[in-house]
Length: 370
Image (cartoon, rainbow, N blue to C red; front, side):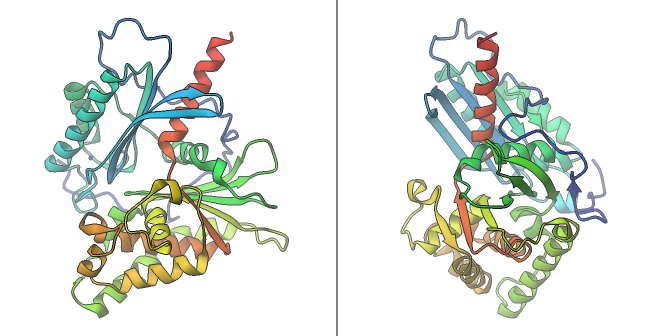
């Protein structure tokens, strides 16, 4: 994130599972991870109206949200997102490259400037799979702290799953039986089975596998200009992911009276949802909370898997920046649809950052009433 060997992309069980260690309810978990004070020193007194911030440094993207509490949640006052490809080459080298570090530090410097200008009271900045796996992850974290003042908290896969659920659970469709929430990231994918019978969803079971749009794409080398090679590569991607999901899939309930609700938070599902609506450009207002028929998601996925990189790059809402990664996301999505036969897919343009903000605000409110 100078070892010679790259870490194995998956272990014999296909990922990390936590059925035996049941986390607290997603909405009430008190959170043991350190809250990183991601604002430089010397800010003086905080203004009376508090601002909170969340930074999510993933394997592919760096994202920031700044928000203030409101009666029904929070109001976003600033946001930032940039593709940094922190995990580029990580599958082969086991390390974060110098160029990837430079891109991430440049993006985080912009985030640090926004934190200053917005007088942020409390922030939490997290890093995920790329920093968990990289042999030089600690050196990168220290460089970020030294050059930007941001203290990145490298969170576990379990914490990543919990925050994603907390951030998007409000968009779950009502229904009977458990629901499945998933987050397709750059370096990993989290699947979370939740019980929705209580006042807030409770995590029943979860799985994290080291396959995201970057790690899966880089693990399957092929000639992108050859249609046959593209088809074979997609089949191989699907098998890699299916194998890693196998043990979790066996534990999933198969109930006659189950609504099989499914909610996804990731660039993959928001991109496919945009194509489902035939949008000329991405529009969060119509995508966040959208429900898409599973059949439509599969048809779009097949179309993208068969298209050439240039054809994908010419499609609105994809572009050249995502053209090489979206197929890996489709392979993961289809594997999820295979193990959880939901008729519809809920789409969330929210996740870890929103989960962090809700956790920060909730914790601060509890301290205020003591």
